[in-house]
Image (cartoon, rainbow, N blue to C red; front, side):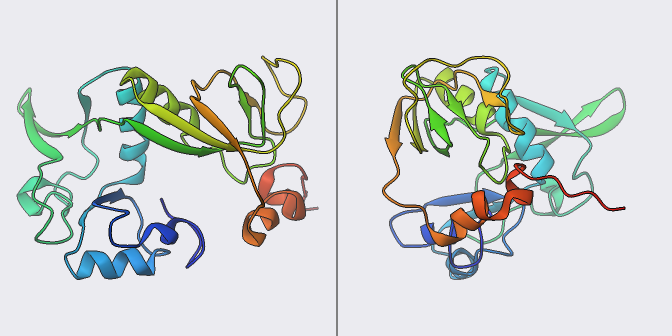
Length: 212
């Protein structure tokens, strides 16, 4: 969770809401940074690409991934293992020796709940994301939670009266059958979220600008 400074992801920076953060970037989360530095929560700084692949691994019920990404850096368990404070003691990555070479094994997370945002939902739980700023790992996250028997909650806009599957007619594809357990209608969108979609079509993918 990166979020926009003091607006989105950082809103979780409250005692009792978080016990652990595993992120590739903390720069836009000043409240969470403070919690980390004060040793109030566990925090791990792992490569963003590795985190993305780990979610897919979890969706496939795999134990993790093996890669050289992070080798001989602060992510390497011999150099701290990505831990950001004394409270963070779990070993999320370990060194493996394969054919005479060092590799890093990252353990897949056990995800049992997901919070997602979609544009439109249908009665079967399919979610479109044509007005969302980014897709990221939404599908993989929902699949990983479903594979673990967990609960996926999706904030949505309008509820479609019919089922939709297949390709979307907009710039953003339909994320077919995310395994959403509950889709909750939004009360109102924060101004920053509205800016990132309809009011900022270039960001949401609804408008394309071409340099000449």
